[in-house]
Image (cartoon, rainbow, N blue to C red):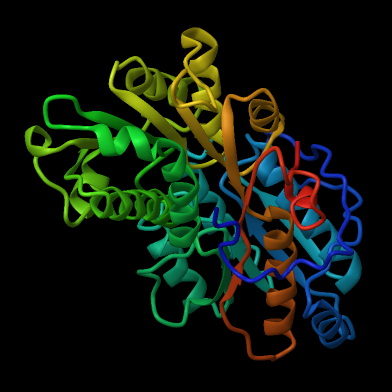
Amino acid sequence: MKKKVLAVLLSTAMVLSLAACGGSNGGDSSSDGGDAKTEGEDNAGGETGGKGGYSFQMIVKSFQSTYWQAAIQGVEQAKAELNVEVEANGPANESDIADQVQMINDAIEKKPDGIALAACDTKSVIDPLEKALAAGIPVVCFDTGVDEAPEGSVLATVATDNVAAGAVAAENMFPVIEEKVKAATTGAQVRIGEVNQDATALNIQQRGQGFIDKMLELCTGAGKKVAVVGNEFYVNATKGAVAEKEAEVIIEVGVPAQTTVDLASTEAQKIMSKDDTIAIFGSNQTTAEGVITANQKLNKLSTDPSKGIIGVGFDAGTPQKEAIMNDQFIGSVTQSPLMMGYEAIVTLTKIANGEQVSDMPMDGYWYGKDNMEDEKIAPNLYD
């Protein structure tokens, strides 16, 4: 199985306890960040640490999951190392797009030395980015990029290669379900589910589409015709699919009305309740936990394709780790939100110091029962 998305940036010396910090009130969170490093950190810290005294604004998607709390731990470490101030805010829910836009506008009014932004909806932040550009405030995006950002408004993006990350989930799922895929016919179709928390954030779009495209490629390589049904965005973005009645394999994509575990669970239940479903992918922490919650009612997940539905997740968190240990998920793909938060602040500090910066692709790794304690995996498996 393919384990990596990108070459590892995390030092094996990075050992952190990602205890939950911050709250759902969207305010600044604080905790001891530990000693996380990247291979270029000594150089970065040395160049940026000499001046310090800068004040930055950070807008996350929300504080509703431990993923964002882990990112704030990285911010706290960067603050301590670089002698900078960071005020972190975020809406109560990742679906609260208008609230986040207002937070960005409020941040601009404070005239900070820079803004770190994880956009809930990439189109909705275009106007605030134009305002930041006009005000001379540099912006670094993290976790998700903004493809249509006004030229010069976003100076760097710190994010996982989400297309590749979604593909890794498909590459590790496919061998487990391959025999069922090969046995499928138009009269006896098989269904693979995907639950994405939205169709508006670029990272979720890329990750969800990365999974779909790779799974379509693998199934087509096995001689099967594939249909993609469900959410309109992902259906329209997919190339090479056939009509549902012509397909032997169906990829069904569900997107909840709002970003909550309960609503993600509802979408997962719709897919998992169908007799032809053989596998399901939850493409972030919220939707993976939605799949797990759905299974509490349906009891259909298994790591044995002859006994149930194969489950694959994304990110981490206690429910997901327990699902892997309890043979409900075969595994998940982890990111490093802590290092994204850390590097976003390092990058803003470099910009404030007049240094050149560029996009920074971050790591993602496949993990399962066999490698959860690996030194490159364990630090990213926050609770």
